[in-house]
Length: 109
Image 1 (cartoon, rainbow, N blue to C red):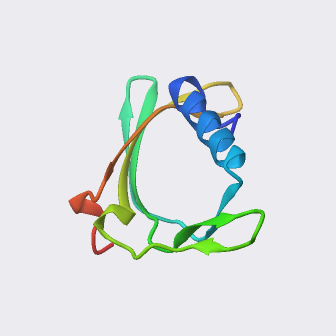
Image 2: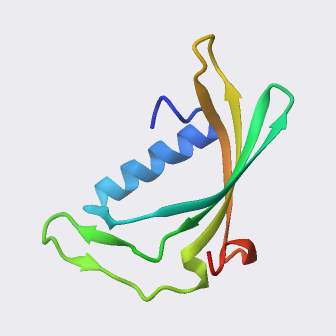
């Protein structure tokens, strides 16, 4: 994660991972990504995709209990990211991430 994410996206990801670990939780089961669309933008790219969280659940690390919630429209997110090429080897890093829960273009995906 530290290699793929930088800038505000990297800070957000590291803060979220730390908060989840401090809470004694982890994530179990599956996330599914689909409808990837990548648009060029100057020296970077603007990847967008849908994420299906309907089969991903929180899990208590101490007890092993899975905290499942019924899927809803908010289980489907549309991600907007900003990526830039960082070195001659061809490493891309994500600098900004935002998302919309329950996005119409991700429902029924």
